[in-house]
Length: 138
Figure 1 (tube, one colour):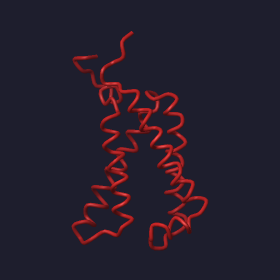
Figure 2 (figure 1 turned 90 degrees about the vertical axis):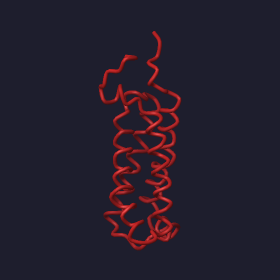
Figure 3 (figure 1 turned 60 degrees about the horizontal axis):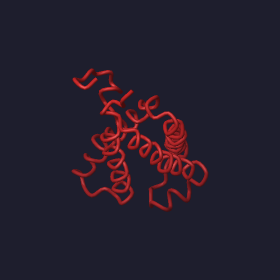
Figure 4 (figure 1 turned 120 degrees about the horizontal axis):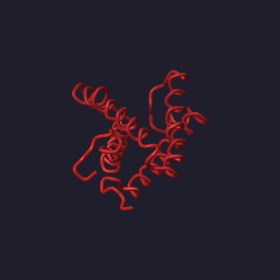
């Protein structure tokens, strides 16, 4: 049976590995050594419970990325959620701050990382399959 042309398993696996490495490692750092994380990126002091939520969410994405790497098509919703929240952050948090003044270094770093995930998500996700849209190729 031929693989559907919209499915790029190599790209999907790359994105899951990137999620494990990026989100998983950052999540662990935030949860295990939050003061180091805050100091490393010169982030103003955060409320520890909110920082814990961010770290936990990142770690969860990293752990789910392991499952996605093993079963790429079954875990596409994780990539869609990742793409959605990162896009929302850029649109509703970063861009307004950009127009209001110069965002701090850590915001530029987060924006660059989030943008890289969004671009890779857009390349890797077979949207027709993920959203149940029938195409002429299906």
